[in-house]
Length: 408
Image 1: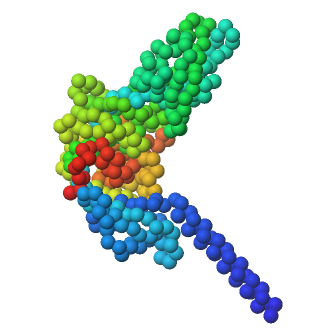
Image 2: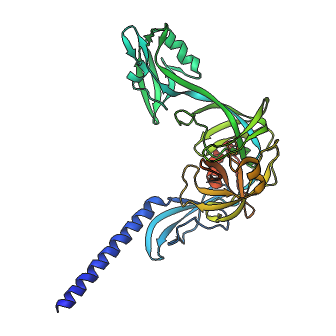
Image 3: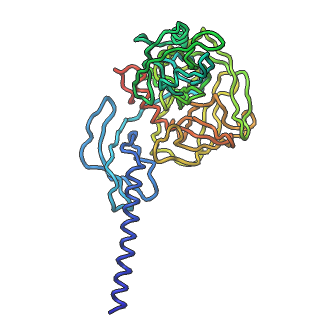
């Protein structure tokens, strides 16, 4: 009888451990997996972890917009245990023109981004009026005394007057106001102790052109202030033609870069969105060096293995280079959805792998546009991160003509 009791007690203990482990797994997957998935016509839901499967609802699809329907379903662990309900958006078969063409980015910020908050010597000691008012690096100055700030000079001219000003600013997406009294510095002149940035320029790569919506997508990550890391809020911007005329090869510990010449008078389009997933806008005359339109590949259609990036490292003509997709994330993660490894000896010889300026280079796999290059591994430039193309596609819808459908 004693042995039987001990055996039952052991079995109960093992069962409790199993139940706790199962509950932990369900909780983990419920929190880590997305609440919605994009699929193209004929495509599956994914990527999903090894022990997770998708069970579709039998309910009919509900129209959302032209070419798009939505339905529901459930993610199942081990084919038995429900994890969470998810929404599935069927976006038809969007046809996009992959590019790989370099372009120049010229941006004017909507406000001024605070890049540094410092102090200075005065007759009464060390002072930092802006810091005392609660302004921090990464904040965005939107208004001074009720007037919109569009350039650094709007702030400088007010500070030099020495009069108390009321500042409206964004701090971590929260609108705040502060009153700042400039102080007279020992070197002469009134100051408030702010360094700000109102514009940006650089080189990136066009990812695709959506002819149906008249919109383009590029870069795969936002244009940020280098000092603070804050995304520059876009007021206005231009996409201009650029000619790549030099390469600084990447090496371990030092990311390389493309150098190029802006054709400032040769505007090819307007920037309308600066988003965490890239820059978006409208091209004046369509894509210049694009190929034929190909289907969008959603994350569920991507596989580990051979793919190609279209990028330009000489002149302005894109070339296809072989890469391997080594890892695919189960959840979109700020441009780090895939890990890619450059295997093409031609590109390795020219650049050492992925370098700055190649961000936005489209990734083609199995005849579909599946992603875009975003970041380089600083300690191994042969490898880098990429973003899912379906993320960029969805954002691009807001940058084109809203009355047009993207589904073919």
